[in-house]
Length: 168
Image 1 (cartoon, rainbow, N blue to C red):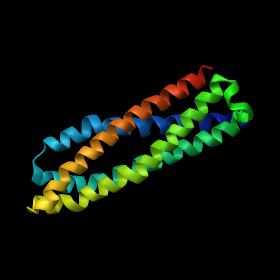
Image 2 (cartoon, rainbow, N blue to C red):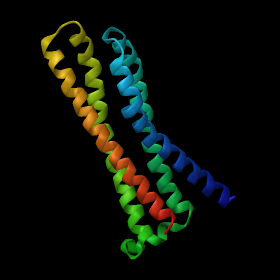
Image 3 (spheres, rainbow, N blue to C red):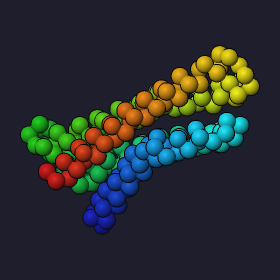
């Protein structure tokens, strides 16, 4: 039974991690360019439906990934290896990976979500010709693009840390 729990938790951790980081990649490299190439009048209604769902989906995946990672640490019996974190490559990789995942989740909650929701507020105003909103939209999009790129880089480093931990 213990093996079933450990395997299930590990599976959920890996699955949600792949969906979390993969969702960010998909958003940045496939979805956003496609949406930006659509006519402006159709973009607004789509973004109004898409952004809240997508942001909440990715945030929940991040939270589940981190939670199952912590559960996995204890279910696998490896928590004791963290007593002397810097004595093994595994300990260093796990601590760095966890810290980066937490940083990524914080970045998502504090920067990405507020910027995306702000885009939903000012987008319709910009579409109606509001000059202030029209100037703010490109700035928000640029911020989301830059943070998205940082998110992808951080996600890649998290995956690297997990691979190092797995093979240590």
